[in-house]
Amino acid sequence: MSMNSFNRFFPTPKFLELPSFGLDISDESIKFMELVKTKKGIKVNHYGEKKIPAGIIESGKIKDLKQMEEVLVSLRKEEGIKSVRVSLSEEQVYIFNLKLEKLGLENIRESIELSLEEYIPISAQDAIFDYELLSEDEQSLKLQVAAISKNVIEEYLSVFKNSRISVKSFELEAQAISRSVIKKGDLETYMIVDFGKKHTGIFIISRGIIIFTSTLDVGGRMLSEMIEKNFKISFEEAEKKKKEFGLRRNATNREVFSVLLNGVSILRDEIVKHFLYWHTHKDEEGKDRPLIKKVILSGGDSNLIGLSEYLSVSMKINVEIANVWVNITDTGKYVPEISLDESLKFASALGLALGNFEHD
Image 1 (cartoon, one colour):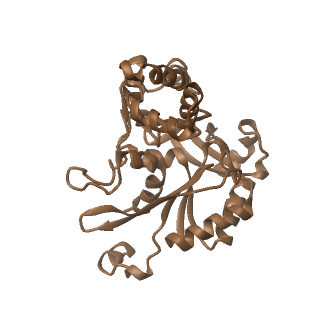
Image 2 (tube, one colour):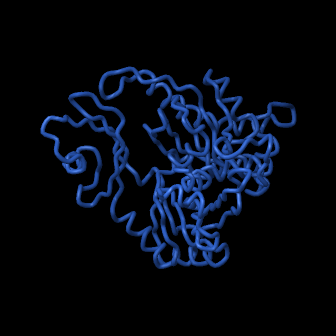
Image 3 (cartoon, one colour):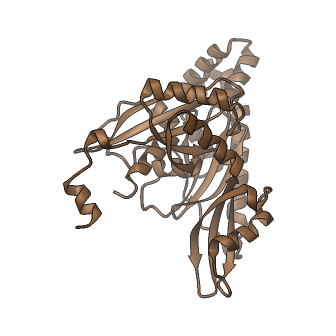
């Protein structure tokens, strides 16, 4: 009897299972999500957000290990989190494509290690890497390699270990988001724009693999600060104005619209730059890249009123707000108890939690 059939007929008792939460760690907060399997499919069991005091994490790197442990210990005690899948910030991970000739190739990992320092600014002995096979022919292998500093991983592992939380996996934030917003098995090419509070991630995914990532220091907080400065009002009032009016153009909203447009056009210019580069430059083998089918907006500030329409019209491409439930549920039958605004904010945590069901 295979292990799979054994599990099917004699499932692990619920109290013995160790469910893994998806943990999306940013500079400002930890978002967590737990999914459970029910007779009606996968459902949200538990989710939330815990603020991280300023200065503990910067650009995805832990600056204060002791304080980070304190945050995680309280998270374990308050929410009962014991096992996690964690996302890593793009700012700490290097992604590149590598072609290896088959002639004389004995060990793929050793061959990658010898090439690492040509592509990343850290020494091979200080790096941890993984790879994915993109394609192969008779002569060569085309690989995608993701590398990160050993120091970064060791610091994350130590704070979780000291907080008595076990780490089931580390994953690129872009991969986690794509797992929640792109239908499983969809091999088309998409650009995902993850518009967060302080940063925006731009990712290109093709055939289910993240090909490109970039992080911009542009986010929803910057837009609120622009309104705050222009109207000389408090940050809280500026946030309220941003959410209430957005990019809606009318008599009462004219000034808010023009302030927001200045900020959003910075974001649009960056998206256009990457979009054009992708379509006008050949890949490493001199081949045309596949066309980007659409731009998908995720992140807590992506549902700014009129944002997707503005980007769509000014870029002349289909821009859509993400559906983070695409691989979980038919929202016509089951509506999760989480608003659209919140669901966009939890795209990464949700994608990580979905990793528990990858092989089901």
